[in-house]
Image (cartoon, rainbow, N blue to C red; front, side, top):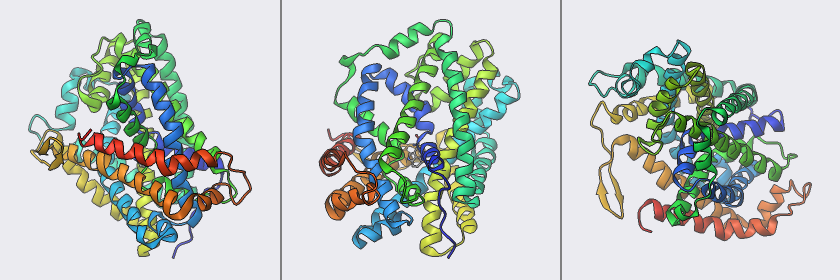
Length: 458
Ligand code: TRP
């Protein structure tokens, strides 16, 4: 059995967990969502959800992990053998997510290369660069978008994970996360000062509560869970590498704060840039926005190639640090439970995920690959890529978060959790009363509502 890794420093842990949380979700999902759902009215609701419900689930995962100092499956077994399956479910969720996340990461890498080499390939035809070159819509097999770039992306991810917790993951996050912040602030300054920015800013700042209905609140809840990387035991695994002496409450708020700050900065950077270029923000889905609309916006603005390079590098850093955390969750399980070496586990798993991901990319346009889905509207056959996202976003992630809360709130008991949260009395857990209500009632009910909403039942 290999020796278990540990974070060398508390700030290393904070940056790594923030690195997991800050991902594609913050940069391409959040801005469009805030824009379409009432601007600052949405932002306010999102804030409340993150700091009340999101923080509750996050600290719950951290606590379970740190208590046992084991991978997600082992940590849950430590609490109650019967609940070990939640860990297994989390591993499966991570497996599916990384299969597609690594491919999207590969597309981002291709954009980085295109912009760093002058951008002319994208500019020649932004729509076809994405649909044909990357996704193969024209009928030519997309070797770069489906094989070469995703492979490089997952190889980098595996390499860092193989280096280990403090030597690989922590070190990389300590460099990439501060860099990401600097790039984002540059882009933010560009966004709010661009000619015509005031229109976009007004739109984002104006609190339009008439747009806020139950569906918008459900969307905010779902986004918060996704953005904070909750529900699949990744935060549980990261928490398991944390020293018992550190303050979990403070760390949780720091991580939630960083994740939200990135989402907001991204929103206030991207929406004005898109506005100034006269781009329809709500059309074309998230991928269409990040890969086609924004590419046209960069083309239209002064020094657009430089800002484009900056944006896609930022997106790449965000995606890599998230991908690493997902792989680590799975690798921790395989090394500790099945006694396989870290190197073989990381390399083997990433090859399989990469392989499954090929189908994800091909299903977007090149090949007719479908999944099957059942919701209140009956049976449907979404493209395989959407099917994989539905499985994780609508089913497995919320279910994982729900079971984590029920296990800790009702089976393990808040007293034991609170004892671990307070580092056995070292840091008085002043929020215990609120936490109890949140973890036993509010969070589970909110999650059940998200799931019912996702399946069109309410
Ligand atoms: N939080 C990531 C993002 O915003 C995505 C994500 C969801 C994730 N679940 C995760 C990342 C679990 C790591 C682990 O893009």
